Structures are given as C-alpha cells and as structure tokens.
Length: 320
Ligand SMILES: [Zn+2]
Image 1: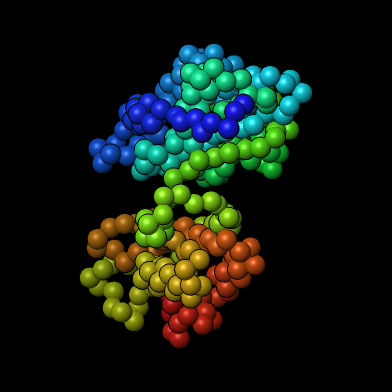
Image 2: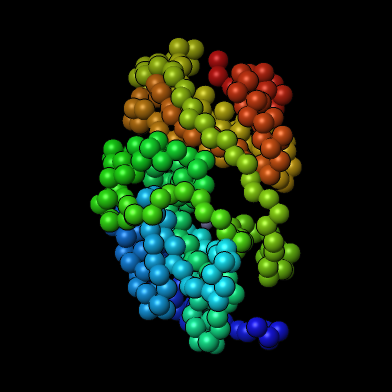
C-alpha cells in the first residue's frame, strides 16, 4: 500500500451512528440498549446487515460476541481486530461503544470503496455486554472469550427478572456456534469516546488510553429498626437511612482524599420499607471504588472494609 493518507466518509459514519441510535432511543437523546434484550437484538441485526452488505463473513461465538471478517492477501497473517460494544447502560449515550464498532465498519467500507486489499485479515468485533448493567457482570463477552470468566458460570447469571444469560442468548438467537475462546490476533484497536470532561477541559481532540481504572464493587446492607415516624423519639431511633447517608458521605470523602485519580460512587439505593411515615429499618446500596493504580484500589478496599467508625475521614461514628 502506498503512503497516501486515505480518508473515511465522515458523513456516512455520522449517519450510521444516528441510525444505530434510533434503536433504543430515549426521550433525552440517549439510548437504552441493554444487553441481550430485544432492543439489543435489533441493534445486532442492523449491524449484521451492514456487514453483510460489505461482503464480510460473520461468525457469532457461544457468548454472542460477533466477529465480521474481511480477508487479507496473506492467509498466514493473524487478524487485526477493530471494535467495541453495541450494548448500553439504562441511560446510555449515542456514542459509547457504538462509535468503536461503527468506526470499524466505516474503515471496512472505506477499504472496499478504495479497492484496498490489506495484507492481514481484519475482524470487526461487537463484544457482548460490556456494560454489566443487566447481569451485574461487566466485560462479560470479552471476559468469557478471554477465558477469564468460566462460560458455565456466566451462562447462569440472572437479571432482576430471573432470566439467565443463556436463556437471553437463546431468546434473541445469538448463542452462536463458534467457541467463546481466545484466538491469536495481531493487534486490537478500539476507538472510544471519552466518558469524562478532561479532553474538553484541556481543549484536546484526541487522547491515548494509558491505563484502565481498577474497580471494586460492594453490596452494603445497613440494618436498623422500622419505627413509627410520629411516636419514636430521637433517643429510640435506629434509622438505617441516616446511617447509610453518613457512610455515603464517607465514600465521597475517601475518594476526595485520593486526589483527582480516585473514584468512589454510591449509585444504587434501596430503602425499606420506603414509606414517608416510617423510620427506615433497612437500606441496601452499592459502593464502588476505582483507581488506575492497583495498589491504591487495594488500599481503598481495605479502608472501606474497616469499621466506618475508625475511618480517619471522620471523627464521629457514622451510626450510633
Ligand atoms: Zn464503552
């Protein structure tokens, strides 16, 4: 191939992104395309039709990962992988994941238009369930493919309605024939939007990922005592929500104590009995910490497992 700097068709890329964003579109302009749902199925089918129109060969593996292959000139060369994920969070954006997949598609389209045969084959990947929001297990498809998550265990994971991953794969017709097992590849490229504000803040158009955020997730349960809101005096209250609120504040303080790199989030809260005139007797909530440095995440995890009362972040016990 010559050294010409070939260009993609930016309008075609944009139009395809917008066409994918119609599937699962939300009123606020985002998408809700939860993994292995009927909406995800429609996204996959649209993607598969685009690949078919390009003459790519599609194979689907046992965890639903989709690989669309464009042959190269040299059959001994390992494939170059491009891709990302088409599933989204419940309140996802148009570009997260979809950009990586559809930008790869645009590369394939441009190669076809320009009549270019690459030396190595190229495979465009749509990984199943990158988000983890339905089955509580992020990077599920790539993790099963890489052999990090045992397939049987992944098949048995259930969503809030009790539907297993295996049932969901079968329901949408995406439990494929190919084994969910790693194959050698020459390289893997993933274009991804930045999910945070830093590039914009620094007026930069593009950056290179230097590391990923290590993360730990906890499910916390605070048990107090249900009591009448009108008749129970302060001295007799064991209010689980007030306790949870203080722990949530601690999580935020722990994050801020780590500077700009640390992340600490409570994003899910279930209050029982969730009645305006009952002192809450039980609260369940999620806690997650992230940090790019594994040693720091270990420290955060150890600190968060210690009794909250002994945390240096506060002098007072969070819950008496
Ligand atoms: Zn993503």
